[in-house]
Image (cartoon, rainbow, N blue to C red; front, side, top):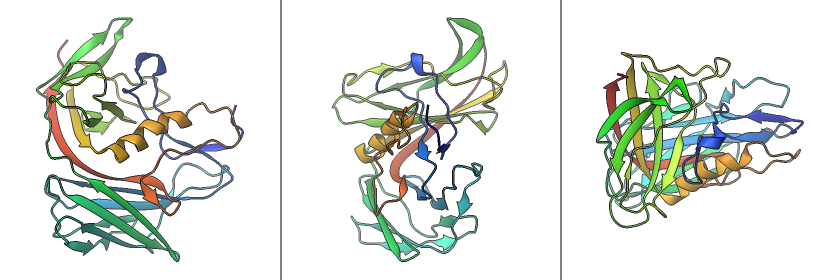
Length: 270
């Protein structure tokens, strides 16, 4: 087993239930190195949009990572040429003001921190895919476990990438799922979103009458590759585990995600 590892995100996995393109995601790092973590997102919905900067701790520390407020963060719309320097909100959070994400536009995030520059680009897909229906369903192998089932249809034409997140009574379930349409072009998805319901993990269980929310993000391939390869960091039996494929240059961990984002809510009934 890995001797010195820490998680940037909490481990959320129910491994036997997922195909290669449907994963719960997390990341683990070699605890000997302290690294910069950058997480930025811009959508085609109205802002403000945020970038979070933090740094990992040594393996003997806890998982409460320290926010960095001493950076300079810019997001530039490479399609229109419009750029904005973000405002620090403390806690390592930086926020836009007037910028508005646009479908089909490519964005560049630049972070200057401690004499280093980190750059990432990401493109908002042209089309936003909506979840047509959301309901709760008992797990066939354990009737005590209830999972959400979002129903949505992939448009014909390969090259679509998705990320799904879920909430129960406005409490987010840890981790997310990623999918592509390489083998499922044009398919209607109606799969349960499995997650770890063990009390030790801290995820909420779904009960009758609960408010369920699912967010469906349409993402570009670079963002998809990042979240997909987070899985490869789980259960690596080595003292020097590999890191996921970040789209950020300069050696930082994390991702810059320019995406379409839609949400659906429903009351659990089963």
